Image (tube, rainbow, N blue to C red; front, top):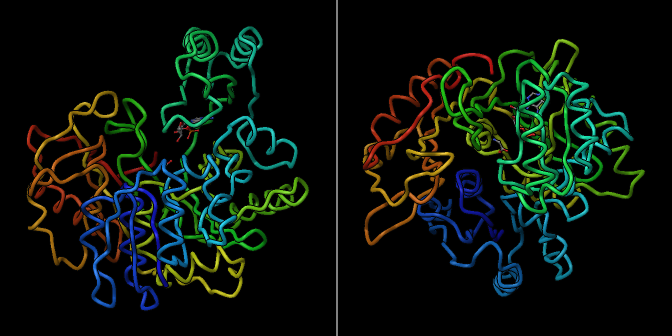
Length: 430
Ligand code: AMP
Ligand code: GLY
């Protein structure tokens, strides 16, 4: 099987590492890829090949996939999915893992997701959509200001504003609807009630009719220990999720997928790919905060190492609507923890271009793997190229062991000018 992976972050690196293990995979190209992916070796001894086609060059990517007779294209990030890359590839007879444009709206428009959830009675965070400033402010006031104001469109994880008071909510609403701080992504907004509880990331493979729940994970979205500081893309993750039993987690997934698939059927939407509902476990049960239509980052770094399955077979079966024929096999006796090493100044203004050293110390370890997120080569040096630089993932028989191993490994990495790392990943509820 020949595979093209589209994307360049930690999520795509761990997917490539997983796909490379499959005996059926003969070639992997990654576009635009990163230096970490290019170090991966396939089961047949070939290296993963790095292709310098930008993620936005949909037609260039499609031409490449056709020329190389790629059997499966895996789309990592949400941007191309929401732009309709799957539809464009499928028109040319290519097989794609990732939803089409209509199905990608679950992430591309928070208003669409909120309203779909209402129409089909999904357990969603209570909230409303607005484009009128005064109506939005009145709703936030009716919640006593305890709400989360969210831009409708994609904002790379920077479009949600948690508020605890009316004045704070007014500022967030004005910034989006009046000052247009996020441009057209903020043409409309969702205001959700503030929910207290523990967050849970579910990753569900769905082939349009059947679905399979991957191991559950928890992300740590805030920058600082104790879940303080600004929201980030995710500073670390761990799996399994220790606050619910496997049966309880399966029940949460069922409570989402039954109405989700029923709603999709009624509205003529076919969802084929990975659905990742971000969930708050509240006192009154699970509430979906948002839908994502791709693997989470860094959650994927702790999910893939817990899968026994041939990843290529699993993703291909999803794309070909044959998921029910593949039994899911999870390494229940393995826990995994990912600690993200981020650049100073992240998330507001990360300092980039700094030399990264120490990775050689970590090669060949059986229980630790470094996934590249924001790195590039400058001559022969590896330098920082993104706010989140590396994900240090470790696994072991329990979360305690995996956490210790991840931090021990992360301490061996040196970044010129320093770095940021949360010291409490897997260290308590968030
Ligand atoms: P989102 O942009 O919807 O993924 O939200 C980003 C983060 O904001 C989530 O992971 C939560 O930590 C927090 N959040 C979002 N919606 C809510 C909500 N309704 N109540 C409390 N926290 C929320
Ligand atoms: N870890 C959050 C996300 O991937 O959206």
